[in-house]
Image (cartoon, rainbow, N blue to C red; front, side, top):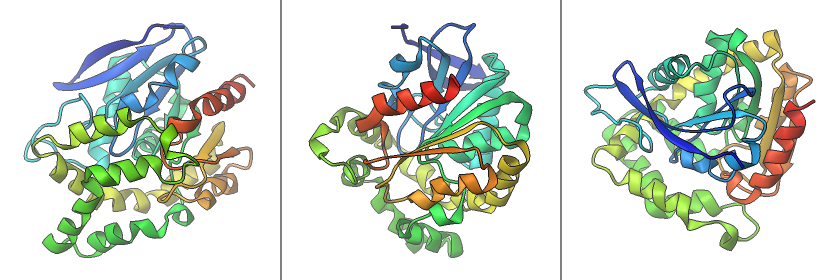
Length: 284
């Protein structure tokens, strides 16, 4: 088992915390987490892949142990986040890599792929959406904020930021909630409790509409470049529906889609199965 190292990269003055494992000479794999988590969501996956890949899992700007500057010092949009992560890959020497995207990591990683298609060797999407049909009714209150960014609609979204909702995100759709470790969700709630963290997340809820607006651009990339593509999907995800996974095959007919009987945070219950799917896919 490869030892995991915990590092900080200076990205033009922005500190990005990241986990790293595997041989620097091995094929590169970038892991991009989602809301409300951080790179720690890959803690069970990394050891199962580090013998074959050089793995890096950064905490996105404003998440985990990466810098969370005040909102008047950093514009919390997905364009900004992708810009920092783009530079991060250059700083650490990730010139060509496969990318694993989950939730918020998907619009981040897909932006990188559109900008630098020559750098992307493969894409693994775990409940990382790029199609309208993948969006469930759970997005209704967030869509209301997109249409009318009033204080009332913004405050209504604070319900997504409570410890109870984090717990629900981790356990909903699992066959047995007692198989889900409390460690990840409790760490997420710790980070969420930091001063200013809620408004950062509310800004990103509002900006998520920019990702939906880019869906046609992402789809054109899939159709034009046909990257090797694996979708590993918790089929009971309350936010990103199975039709969103199947839709990747519309633009990339060779895409491989695998469903697992679990929820949004599929790695909490199916890390071994997803790791095996990745190994088989990338070793073809």
